Image (cartoon, rainbow, N blue to C red; front, side, top):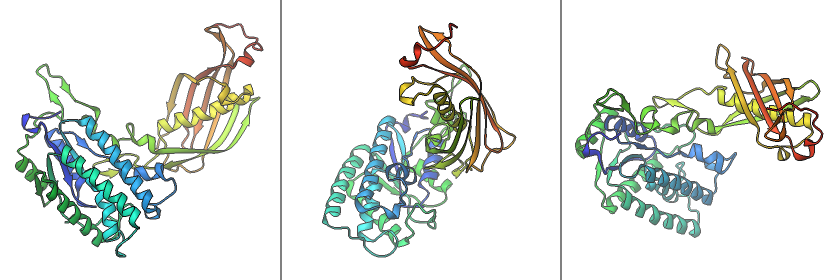
Length: 390
């Protein structure tokens, strides 16, 4: 929710190279002004799904360009959704500036990384695209210079020389584009105070970022305004970064039992609060997805069918009960699923396989109870003896 007309039509970029405090400054400024954040996914989220198993330093020059283009595309979509006003954590220019800096300086302090004329040509063309985007879409640039040590988290270059070169590229390019440009220094509090003063922004005086209406009700423009950026929330984006490796599967179709093991892998940010990552653990969503897949395997084995033959699995009822403590050891977790009741009822003119299941996941015994069902394939419809109708 925007607070005051002074905050309208403000498309502000918080610029700066690695580890300058862009994200923290962006979020604090957004909280105080009500102008929504535009926080694009970082390379640590994009890399695993674009080039699985690769580290950033292992990517070829043209893979680096692809990563930059993916992030530019995602950033452009995000900015277009926010339309007239936003505060952007970084900018479209940053994807190009980092790639261009590798040509001039090298990311790890080993001198220039000259990748050849084809790479230079492609990077030059990419640069023209992002410069046009920046000139057309941003109204104010706030640049944060290098004031703090580099955060060596494995996702950023380790060279201070590269950081300085990228900083020079950003400053020089912003100056050439003619967009209002200010350099702001100091602590996060100092920076935000200066930015509000320089840009003449109105400050939020409402309740936790919500608009307080005359009838006493509170109004938020979006869930992000109430809970923070979706990229930092598990139930928005974080759960999508969890992968479930289910293996060592043992099936007893006659007794309706299936045992397996599962590993959880995290391909990106899980969840965070106050700028710090939360420790991942087995979640309710993980439990539903793990139990659902193993239940499918067991029921298909009982019917002698493949997944392609079945219709969508229908989740009719669901109950979840976690243990006393979060299950943080998410490697080789034992999983047990048991079909306690099974029938072939007739519904909407077709026979279904309906089942009641219960199970445990992990040493902390995350318990799952559910009722599920699916329509049997055509070849099995005539062999069902049940006459029960639902």
